[in-house]
Image 1 (cartoon, rainbow, N blue to C red):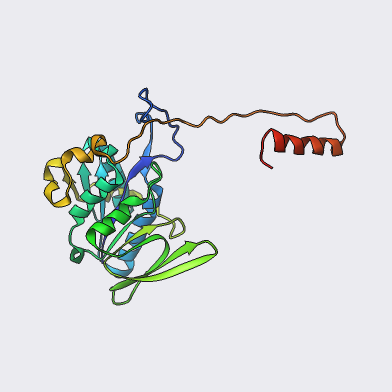
Image 2: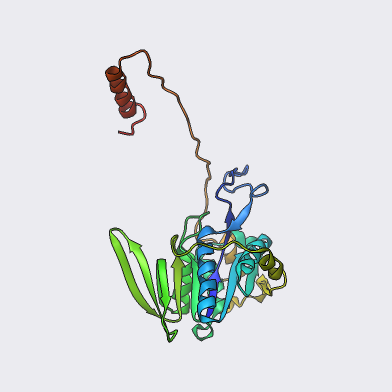
Length: 270
């Protein structure tokens, strides 16, 4: 089984976000960057498939130089190799352009069995990349997967998806693309030997000049902020306002009435 895993580097979920002076971007200097948490489920599942069925796991990402750290994390977990489509401007590329370039690198469905990625990117809250890649490659896709089983002949995969009030089970022919949801597995921690081995595993670097733009219908200018199909006009960090309302000096029954009134008319939560 040859499995590709599309990964992305995102700010740590505990990072304190600060908006730059332009009001449209975040200050990334003090931010800790991590593997997109949903992509960790995809990496773990790909490694388990390799352990059970043999084969190899190839990570692929598109973004600036710092994305290499995300690839090294996945390699330390147990992936075999990685592909880094690298350019500083790629940090601002939209999901459509990212998918086009990644699909071009993966290319022929006969060269792989499965593509996995997270259900969404937590920084932009979008889950479009994987679906676009499947469409470009002309392969079936299953979104928000919580369980998967490869058939004995390795020609199909049975996937389970959670829906409101139940589950959906679908059989898909391989090759296919699946987006992974929380609950699919518990990602492993990279061991010290794994971290040491990751430093020697191959990472193929693809620069802008290596991309065949004629075959994907895009230009180099469309891979950065200037060619994005959406624009960020303003970013704001939500302010949490806290206020203390003391209820004292009353009988319990009166205090309860006062509390209910405050919850309804001031906090507006009931």
